[in-house]
Amino acid sequence: MSKERKLENYGFATKSIHAGESPNYSQGAAGDVVAPIHLTTTYAWHNPEQKVSDFDYVRSGNPTRKAYEEKLAAIENVRYGLAFASGLAAETTIFQTLLRPGDHVIGFDDLYGGTRRLLDDVFNYLSVSYIDLTDLELFRRSIRPETKMLWIESPTNPLIKICDIRALAEIAHSKGIIVVVDNTFMSPYFQQPAALGADIILHSTTKYIGGHSDVLGGAIMTSDDALYEKLKAAQNNCGAVLPPFDCYLNMRGIKTLAVRMEQHQKNALRIAEFLENHPKVKRVLYPGLPSHPQHELTKKQASGYGGMVSFELKGELSDAVKFMDKLSLFVTAESLGGVESLIELPVKMTHVHVAKEVCDAIGISDTLIRMSVGIENVEDLLADLEQAL
Image (spheres, rainbow, N blue to C red):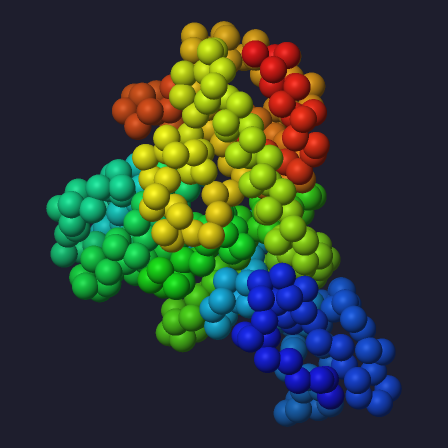
């Protein structure tokens, strides 16, 4: 037996530590405070008609993954969590399970390059409209009879645009459209899309949830019973599940998510303010700045601003490359959300497969730089940026 905990009555940090990990106080149990890593791939049966436990094969279920999925659901304040081998594996499961050839998807014009590549190259039997979702009237005009899904990133990658999730969800639901929100950039700590009307919340857990740049993963969270049953069946049938050790690493990461996100944000705001006042910087994109066009909306629908900052240098591509080459603490690398500060040039890295005319049209210039601000001493980070500029 385990001592009963009504976790819904507790705060975020408490749920992130305790959800899915209640010690078993039964006679003979070890009383693990941390959920153990179950590495077995199969489970014994008493006989062909009676299983020893609820588990039979690791692809279908695993005690470590079960604990992790319960923790995922708790931090997003929904009923169900599903763990996948990567963020793109989670996206693939959504597209192939819930959509059919000819269905129409509306997505932000500034989507993560990997999501665009998945839609354009793999799920090319779908019709996709990439639009500016900050424009509610444009969204209304873009809906077709065959529109089945709205795909939101807020903030977007890499232009840090924020859309009104609640207003978009109300419009979408009036037309029977499923609303998916990629909540990777804000994390569940700063934003809870389910409370704003999202049907499905997606994460690349490789980022802030894992938090240490050492474990790959993706997650789907929902409170919709029917959607959960379909996605759970697809998780089992397709097999892109997260291994037990990776589940353990992600659970460990979640336990410090609250304190990490606070420091990410604190550092990001200082750096954004510094960059906004630097003569060699053309513009800074960070929702915590009053100059951000959706600053007030962010305050309304999120409890913070996150740790992602994008900025555009004055000059040309060679200037951006030279600047990044001079940095010493900021590591030039793709990905984000780790404790260390990372920096990248989208046109040459994360968005290299996006056509130049598309990048130009939506504002991803040759000198636009995306920064994942870590939790180092901020004065050291500022000094690094100053000398490089």
